[in-house]
Image 1 (cartoon, one colour):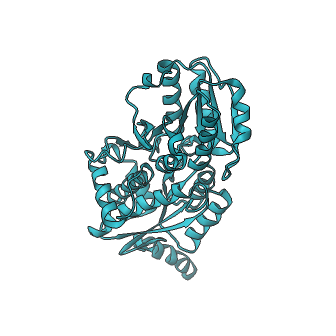
Image 2 (cartoon, helix red, strand yellow):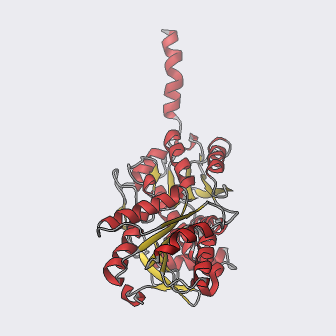
Length: 387
């Protein structure tokens, strides 16, 4: 009998431990870990995403935290390199012992982080990527916020074909999981119109070697080119094709990093269409966007508003709402369950969150924009793009 008592006692004690005995959770703090590109050709994307998340966390902490706990964000650079992401996640889980993960940047990096989150049963919320591999099939601990690349590709293609009248659409894309994710979305969207890409051109991640891709696309004389990459190589592509006097419409997805792209491309960026997954930062009529501006002025006064940091702010708002709903007796599984109760939930950004156990993407709405005078303005009429 004594042997049975000794075997059962540790289990009984474990079951009686308070919620804050979990890693990354104390009576006064919730630790969240992030891996993103803080350096290199995509560095502005990670820096802005993390800044937006920090701004929201700071705002919450100033008002007492979440259910009595302050939020702590531990952020490291992975330079948009998948192998560095693996090391970063391991560090966050094993050394920093965070409660949850969030605010990751990129598809190839997300493709490494998501399985690790599932294996370790650690929630990961908010990816700066619309890749389908993070959405289907649904992964219990992986929670997306933004619309998908399929959403963006379909919006571009349907309007190019149905409104603008484009007959030949080419794709210039990063040769990795990110590029393939958007390319697949474009192919699916084109197939609905009985079409396929007229030409394909590629470049390697974290490089500006765009000329081989240009050379492959140029002979097709496309009506439009959908560009897939971060701001630096996409800007390089735009500059070169403008110099060659191409007459093609140029479009890119939200991952580009709008403000960094506009700055890097300069006057050559004018006329480029970018699909956005959050409203323009100028939409201060929306409560959460107004709050975002207030937080930037207070905590990061030298930082200009941007689509990227606003997305980080929105991701953080969704995460915090999950923490609130999970209550004081917080656990990782309660956190996921709490997020899944967010249905038709207005968080003050003009879009409603819709999660469930079978759907881990909050939004599907898009905001098409076009660069005018170095600034992204709403694209209200696709027909205006006709030559």
